[in-house]
Amino acid sequence: MEQDDSSVMRKYFLILPAILFLIIFFVLPLTFVITQSIYQPDKGWSVDSYSKFFTQKVSRNAYTRSLTIGLLVTAVSLLTGYPAAMAISNIKNDSLKGLLMTLIVFPLMTNSVARTFSWLAVLGREGLVNNLLAALGILDNPVRLLYTPGAVFFGLLQLFLPLMIISLVSALENLPKEVPLAAKSLGANGYNLFFRIYLPLTSEGIVSGCTLVFTGCITAYVTPAVLGGSRVLMLSTLLYQKASVTLDWNMATVIAVIMFLTTLLINYISRKLSNLGVSK
Image 1 (cartoon, rainbow, N blue to C red):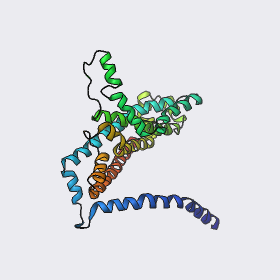
Image 2: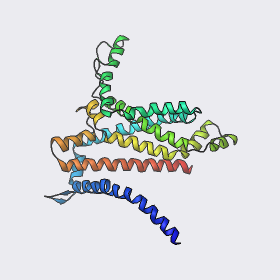
Image 3: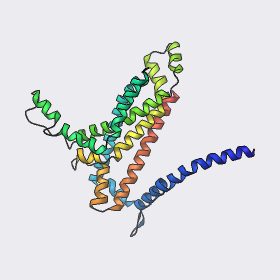
Image 4: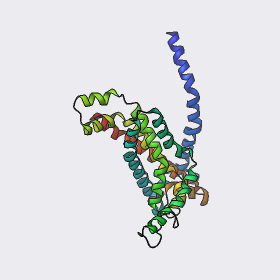
């Protein structure tokens, strides 16, 4: 009995540094930000700042745009990343699989600023796309591709698609190989195999990938600032304006809390949807 107690104590001792790190560098700062968003020295405790955020057209449009683009990027990442992850996980050659994973991870090792600025050479008025369309005779004059929601969408998709693929590959690699084989031996066709075996058993990877991609989209600053500019205002760029330009720290903390709560809500919804898939 004493030996069991000592082993349990050792386990708790090993996780103590991680718990302290999270408390000091995550829980306490988050508590401070939430407190700052609902407390004003002249008014005391109040949620008027949240009401002000949603009544202002600029803030409301920035929130709607961020939510829409984030969900679109997450959905497209899932739809394109799942087939890619399945193809990679089914490769028998370890060298080829390692090469493909390296190519997928390689963009993550490139600075996000450099990756974003490279889109200027692609989407600019004298960029690759406009020059190609002009050479094909499709366009007579260059069109504005930068500083549009589409530019922000493609920039964020290129930035966070690898995170989705990595999460899905990990989930598919952990799927027992005997399960799909057993389903096939019992007469399962491709439709049933995918929707009743692969999707439910890789739901955790889907949830993790969706959470990572959506969180990255709604909190990214460089990509919306460079590719969207002031024309496509996102929550992250609005937060920067409130904190660094107008020095409205109260509204900046409100935006930060709304971003955090939105990511929690999306994670909760995705987990509920994944549980529905498992229950079927």
